[in-house]
Length: 153
Image 1 (tube, rainbow, N blue to C red):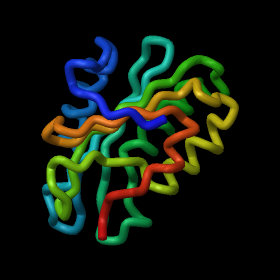
Image 2 (image 1 turned 120 degrees about the horizontal axis):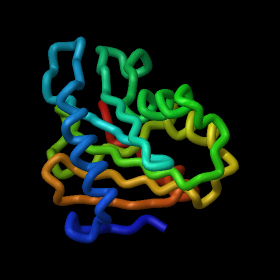
Image 3 (image 1 turned 180 degrees about the horizontal axis):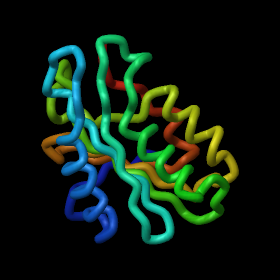
Image 4 (image 1 turned 45 degrees about the vertical axis):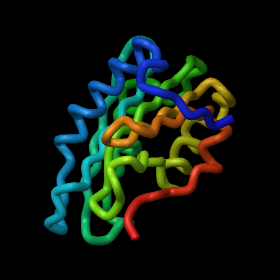
């Protein structure tokens, strides 16, 4: 079930993840000259944080998503088949959207999560936060497939 939250309702760990993701989003780069694509992601497992930021190119398929970067960092750090709870936090905005639209994982990112962590079931929480913090959505692993991607047009 996808839940709408206020920032005050986030847990202490979620707020720490938000700060990491927000800070990481500023590392985002854009090859097509658009400096307003700011996306940061944090994966949390076993009291460890794995960050990633978006590297945008003119063609979306050639870009590296923040979620994918963080997921692959976690995977290569020795968490390929964990049964522990994983939390995901994504913060950011795209240049062609308003700052109150949360960045949801794209199809390739969702596919990679499914391929690598298909046995987690509802043991994965995903939180997306708009740049201005006015929209916060939280969902389980099973629910993220229903999110529509709201990125480049």
